[in-house]
Length: 248
Image 1 (cartoon, helix red, strand yellow):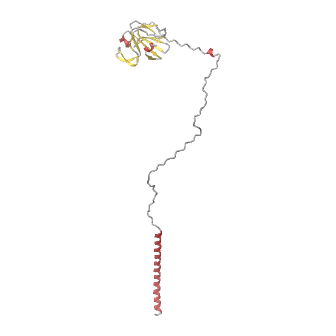
Image 2 (cartoon, rainbow, N blue to C red):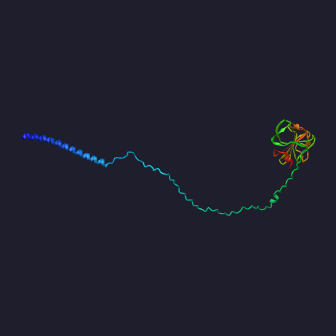
Image 3 (cartoon, rainbow, N blue to C red):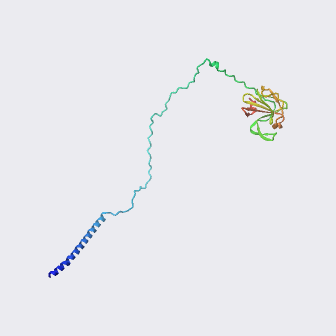
């Protein structure tokens, strides 16, 4: 082969050699990359679950937890009762004064009870009824009755039940001719349905048994009874049962 043929053959093989060498390098790089990737997959484990797992308590029987008893507080001082001597109070004794006996008034003597007697002798035909209604035969209705009605003969004497002072002598539109007596102890007695002529005046001092008037029938609200005395008693302005007053 002449020199021209040698140069052509060298040029052809020189170009093919370059491509062959390049192919070999690519294959070698691919093999190396494959084994490198294979080693990474084996070294890195695949995660079993991508969800976050939170520890949960294991279900089981409920166990009671008892709180330890607190220790009792220790008292700072003794709790036992302590007796304390306390002197009994003594009554203060007054120092006698020479002027005390002269200045001190003498104790008042107990007042003697005033004699109380029935103002007239007769039959009680209507009783005291201040806390409930009683039938009035004259007016034909039911009303309270603040005294007692004593039936007696017209003209019989009506006397003071006890000593006192005549308060009023008047002609009452409902009770007729009426006399009231203050006995100076909270008691006031009333004598009504008397005849018009009376022997006493307001302000007169009377004793038990003093004649105040005579039995009549001047009470318009009690005219159906006939001749009688309406007798009532008040204590400190409040009506009381005359039967209790007369029994004293």
